[in-house]
Image (cartoon, rainbow over all chains, first blue to last red; front, side, top):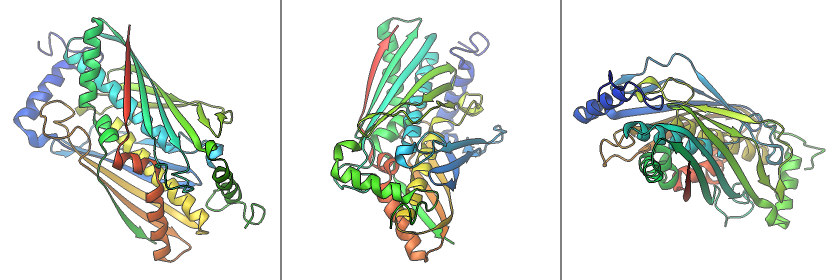
Length: 189
Length: 189
């Protein structure tokens, strides 16, 4: 298969995908990426992130022309005014998005044409932890549930293999299930 | 201090905050929350989450009147068309937003008037893991760096105490550093 014979599947440029994978195999230093977010408090539970630049494949990206802005908030019961999804909901979205894109890319690589990928995620939390009322419950979700419905031009077993491979390669699934070291620096004034 | 004397600090209704904390102390069953996200694949790296309903304080929320929609994507080098921040960037935003809101709430509880809270986050990744090129690098970020600048009407030591308390109570910081069990169900067709 070449890019000319099969330029796209599931909206993924498979020729470019395989060329990229081959390039990274021969030049692993190109695999170093850094993503970044800048956040600023607005008022109360409202804060806003700006996202644009990142480092990839040996240099600073120049292809992303616009900034993304994300507004976070809290609902009334958590003392906000719904200026955006809350941080825990953003984490669920990050997980849903990463698993979904991984499914779509794995399916493209395995010549599976998908027709739909839908998911519903739930996160259960005892807010006594985050509110500082009790030290026993953890601050975050005790568990996350993900329910996928995947349809495409392949037998059920093949579709399940695609989801399983995507789970094993998802960046956010890895981070959310295994954790990541986080270093915090603080300047004042 | 009562809500009448001190109804708001940093945009947080402190009277309501303390009343909520007292209520949850006496009725811990009200602390059970569930947040939810529904996601749907659009094309390629583009998928969209819809966020509205959640369970809180003994019942289904009725205060949030509108839906939030979040679009995810990937930049060109990761085979997308920048239809939104990518999933790993959303995870950084979730972390920034949660730490920031925690700082603002802790400061309000401790009678610290903040003037600004800004942060820059970085996540370093060797994409050979997520791309399935090599089993050695992990799929997600190897490390996350967070740099805060906090200003307000308090001595530096007090501001640093606020940040440290916020870190120890942040829901997303807990999840990102310690991990969460994730259960995935799959239906096909």
